[in-house]
Length: 127
Image 1: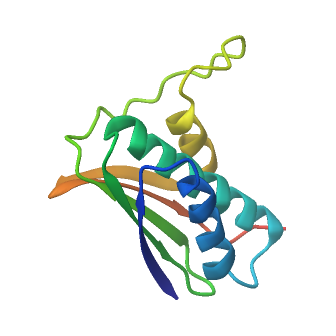
Image 2: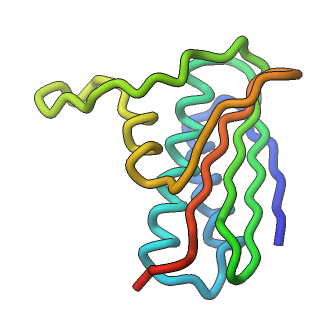
Image 3: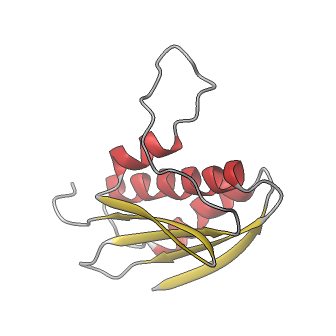
């Protein structure tokens, strides 16, 4: 199953991305579903942080026995995909890439027409 939606820079966009996961990643272990929901939400939020005022395209791909793939495309110039350390004492510090790195099996940044940040979560070895 593949689902594609475009969202404006709005406070409700991360929640809408989580609902996409709920509709796309059906009959999956709860831990996989929760990780995919957090990834989608953080990738959307991160896209708006780097390209404020634009829209993002969210693509979720999933088939039983295959990884869940989440792609978020925006029209910004991109960013350096280095992972900042999580700062326990600073609740305002950006943690999106830290969370993505922790939850995703693989992730990356592709540049072309805009920027695509993608993450995959393997379905194997999930309770």
